Amino acid sequence: MPNSSKNNLPPTDVDNSPKPAHATTGNSTTPRNRLNKTPKMMANGSRAFVWYLLSLVVLIIDQGTKWLAETNLTFHEPVPVIEPFLNWTLAYNYGAAFSFLADAGGWQKWFFSGLALLMSLFLIGYLVKAPRKAKLLSVGLALVLGGALGNLIDRLLHGHVIDFIHVHYADVWHYPIFNVADMGICIGVVLIVIDMLFLEKKRAV
Image (cartoon, rainbow, N blue to C red; front, side, top):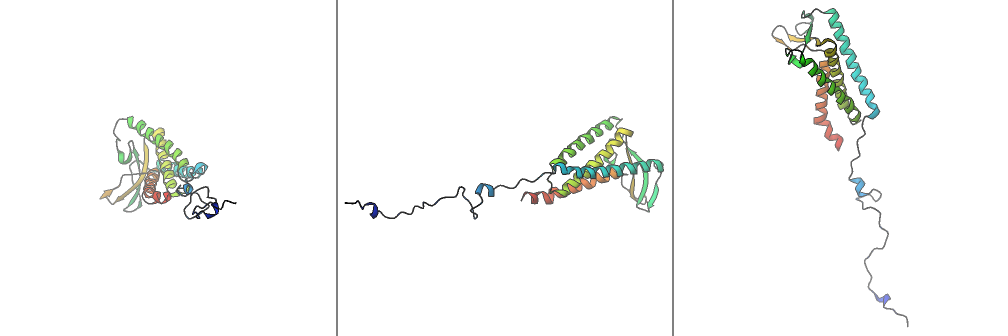
């Protein structure tokens, strides 16, 4: 007589249907472990060459304007450009920004040259690794690089930095005389800070 005990077993709730290889959330085709990963940002790589060209433009403008200042201006004799706000005034800076350590005795030339060289090498390498989509950051780095190289060349060739842009208000207020390289460095630093404060976090989302 056939055994019918198997036919009398209560039904089970076990689902024997095939299971997906990965547990997913909302999409049966995307594994959970892939959903939790943020895509890696692509670096500039070989495209850093574009930013090197920008640095070169800053360097050429800086050295060209310094040559014009040296050949057309007399040391410490102002030439009015926009009265009473702007003069061309040839000056030499033996120190750092705002003539810091200008009277140190000569060793500062090699100290600041070494710092500028190290900074330039760092920026050259960092521009390759910087995120490709972080264009404002790359522009800032390129401007700083061009400015640092411009002032470095001055120190190595002349022992001082050539300045000629004199912003002032009549004889009441005078801003320290500067050059195109200084402008590149200052603008570049501002752009880098803006990127750090407002754009870096958005790229990580």
